[in-house]
Length: 196
View 1: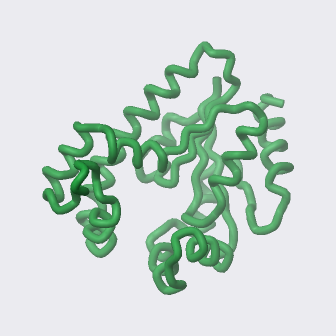
View 2 (view 1 turned 90 degrees about the vertical axis):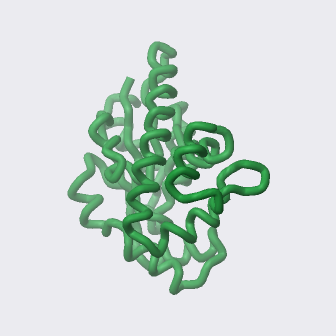
């Protein structure tokens, strides 16, 4: 079974690409969803975050208030690094557990959709890395529509992320998602990997 790391900057369309892989009956692990689950259900993760950032990040229901946490880390690089250390540890433990569960279940490949694939170090555990790229204008538009934020806020997010050249130089395959036929590109990658 192959472990495929799928990554790209915010707004590049990784979610859509993940669905294309699912259409070929591959397992997909969405690390963003995993993080949201951990912030709501993992007592260990919640405790570690509260210990680092204080009880102000807790929602009255006892789960992590992601907006409050985001407000702390987006303006403080050191705080963001601390958050990533904590979040990556818990997320990767869960990813590894899920990947191991898939072994021996006649699954040809697991796609790990991870915006922080390189930052977390998980790319080293992947057989192949696939990056999704598109123009800054397209990413900016998608982020504004998805998150209901201003263009200026979207630009700030994009400025703090790797550019296309980084993804091209650090990936085994690149999917262009700016109006190109994504499904065809996914199919070609799966053929190259011997999955189709």
